[in-house]
Amino acid sequence: MRGHTIGALLLLLLAMWGGTMVSGIHGIADFSLKDHIGTGQPPAGWPMTGVLNSAGAIIFGHQMLAVLAALGILTLTVRALRSELPGPVRDGALIVGGLVILQFILGVTALVSGRYDIGVAHQMNAVLLLGGCCSSSSPCAGRPAARGGEMRQDRAVGTWLLLLAGMVFGMVVGGGHARTIGAGFTIQVWRPFTGFIPPLNAADWNQLYGLYQHTAQYQAQPIDMAQYKALFWPMFLDRCWGRLMACVFLLPFGYFLLKGRIQRKLALWLGFIFLLGAGQATYGWYMVQTGMYPGVVSPPPEWAAPHLLSAMLILLLLIWTGMSLRTPEPVPLEGASSLRGLASASVLLIWITMGFGALVATSGALHVYNSFPTMDGAWTPPGAFAQDPLWSNFVTNKGTVQFCHRLLATVTALTVLTTAVMGLRRRLPPALRDIFLLLALLVALQYVLGMATLVLGNNELGFVHELNAVLLFATAIAARHGLRGAVAAPVGALAAAE
Ligand code: HEM
Image (tube, rainbow, N blue to C red; front, side, top):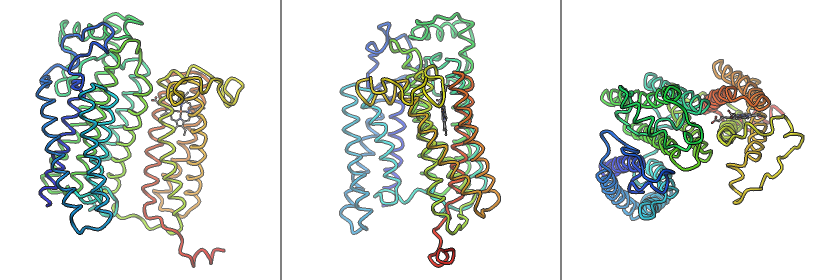
């Protein structure tokens, strides 16, 4: 049973990896991009050149792996349902079985209809499926090893994961800088493995510049080769940073695995995080190629916000797992369960506020209502629900997204400050106290930076505000991690306190 389990999970991981390749080559549209590109025909060699350009082989490989993975998981599901396993495991098996069938239906529908939105749903369901397979009640595997307290201490492995978390921050620096200078659409090729080689001669430059000339951004505001090169290099370095991250993940991973320092469950969990990273990179490419769509002159908000939020989820998993490996035993903290709840709420609220911040930044809402606390004298923006359908107001209506971001930011800042003050008033280990102090400082700075960015309408300050948000998010995660051992005060202690 255990062998089958590992086999099914490996097949699922491989199928998901193949799926990201299919996305990258626009497999579901079978290369007929003429509907999407303003100029009619896709330019030669676009979107993918280099070693992995055999579309048919990639699509076929993905489908075969998907069939094998689905059969494996369904077999395990049926076995689990027919066994005497405890109720929750049987429920988990039912959910995983349902997800695998849904995954198949979504995949076939995406392929037949060639619709990207169904493709995205298919991608998301794959992540849920993998999560389900790794969960404690799944028919496939035990609980993911990321739960603190169940891990063996290994400071080196933990530090390596924290280094990767630092590299995610570096990626946000690169991505945020690219957004600030408007470089997002400059490299319209996807060469996952060979793209670290820069253009070496005039022909290379002409090919890249020629592709960029197909974008709506260029057509709206043409630039010459020298200006193109100035935009190209920051974007090129950002993408190379992503490749470096893959190496910094895979090489130590292989080393630790060979040395027996990573157990099976932890290996699966880390493989899952790696796949999220690969999905993030593919998603990034999707976002870049929207530059070829007519009228799209900068990365659309509905693409950019999920990109930032999923990067933050990867950051969370890396920090949490890294810290858990460094200090697997939670420090027991009596009477701190409400503080732990507040810390969890802080992490969640910061994350949601960041999502709306990304909508503000990418919808151009920085340049409307540049006053605080009112919005040009009013408390709510006029025409907040002017767009149809209603939900689109919360994504692309500049006034509405800015209002949501202000409101959420205020609730978030108050929650985080309360958490920090409560933490500082308790008797906590010194390192944890420092984290709460940092949390208070960063949230105050974040609010001030947000106000200044808005009132001055300053894009560069917005970039600093974005980076500070990531630091704030990471600090809130560290504070929440330090409270893992928090328990409610014993009843006797409460009575004595009264
Ligand atoms: C806890 C508080 C806050 C958090 C976590 C937060 C988070 C963020 C993030 C992550 C971004 C950038 C997203 C991106 O570039 O993709 C952003 C953008 C922005 N935020 Fe905030 N923010 C907070 C408070 C505020 C406040 C209080 C204001 C103003 C009253 C504000 C105004 C803005 C503006 C105008 C932008 C767009 C910047 C640009 O276009 O470059 N933020 N926020």
